[in-house]
Length: 120
Image 1 (cartoon, rainbow, N blue to C red):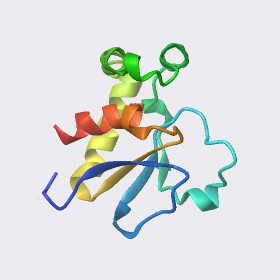
Image 2 (cartoon, helix red, strand yellow):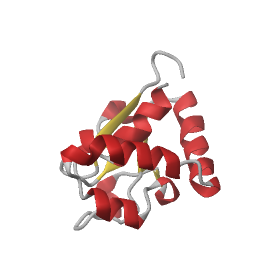
Image 3 (tube, rainbow, N blue to C red):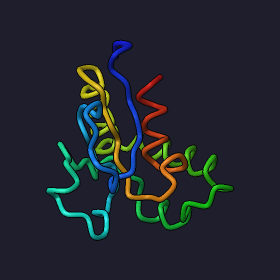
Image 4 (tube, one colour):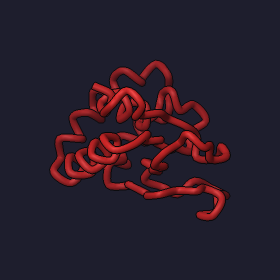
């Protein structure tokens, strides 16, 4: 990843911006009420999303974010998720990558955990 290529996290409901680069939805479930046209996605990479069990346990509780991140990083070692993460890493090498999530608090989402891994 070169300095001009960055990984950022945004809400799927926000209007696409010029500097978004490749826009990838990383949620397992499609955002409620959002049309595909309005989303302006390049890809939907649901294979990289956390398991339903982990997502339900976490329930976007800020007090559980650190433990969620640890458990999610462990899930990312699963072959299908690891392959999806490698795909995102490849996308980030070539241009800015914007990870999209429907959550109201993207800073404590799986997208933020992924962005941290992709930036390192």
